[in-house]
Length: 262
Image 1 (tube, rainbow, N blue to C red):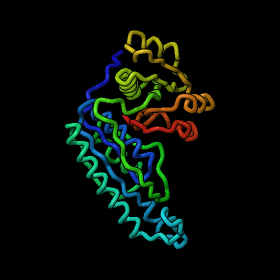
Image 2 (tube, rainbow, N blue to C red; image 1 turned 60 degrees about the vertical axis):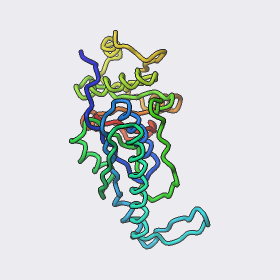
Image 3 (cartoon, helix red, strand yellow; image 1 turned 180 degrees about the vertical axis):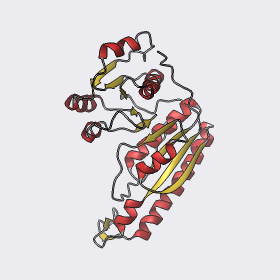
Image 4 (cartoon, rainbow, N blue to C red; image 1 turned 30 degrees about the vertical axis):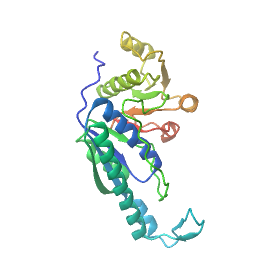
C-alpha cells in the first residue's frame, strides 16, 4: 500500500480573531514554506461577534484602563478590518522573505462553515482547534518561525486513521511531517482498526530520526486525553468528512493544536 505523501498544490488556512486560529496560520505558513506551495489565508469576520455586539448587555474590557464599556457592532467591525489589514501586511512581508505566494481573502460568516465552503478548492485546509464567540483584543504579534527552521516545536504530530483512502492520505502526510521535522507520531485508531495491521502497513516506512510512533484508540477517551496532556500536539491531521461523526467532541477537545483537514 502506498504511503507516499501526495503532491500538494493548494493550501488554505482559515483564521478568525482567536489566538488558536493564529496558531493554525503559523503552522500553515511553515508547512507552505516546507513544500514551497502557495497558501491562501481566509480571514473570517465572524458573524457571531457582530451579532453578540448588538445585544444590549454586550460590553468590552479596556485593557489599558480596566474600564468596562458598551460594545457596539461598528467598533467590532472596525477592529476586525484593522486586524485584517495588519495581517495582510505581515503576510506580504513573509511572502517576500520566503519567496512563496501568500495571499489573503476576507469573508464574513461562520468560521468552520467558511472553511468548509472553500475547502473544495484546496488540497489541504488548516483550521484552529476552536473559535471563540466573543471578541478579544489579544494584542498578539504574529511570530512566524524563520525560514528553514521547524515551526512545530518538539510536540508530536497526531493523525486519525480508520483504513479508508482519505485517512491513508492523511497518514502519509503525517508521516512526512514527522520525518521532516524529526517529531514523534501519534496515530488515533478507529474502532475495529487493528494496531498489528497498522504496524504491518508502516513496516519499512522510514521514521523520523529517533522518533517514536504511538498508537492510541479513539474509543479510549481517557487515554487520548492523557497522551495529549503528556506530550502535547503540533498538528492533528483529520479527514474533512466521514468516519468521525460518532466521536464525542470531548475527545478532540483534549487535543489542543491546529487541525489539518485532508
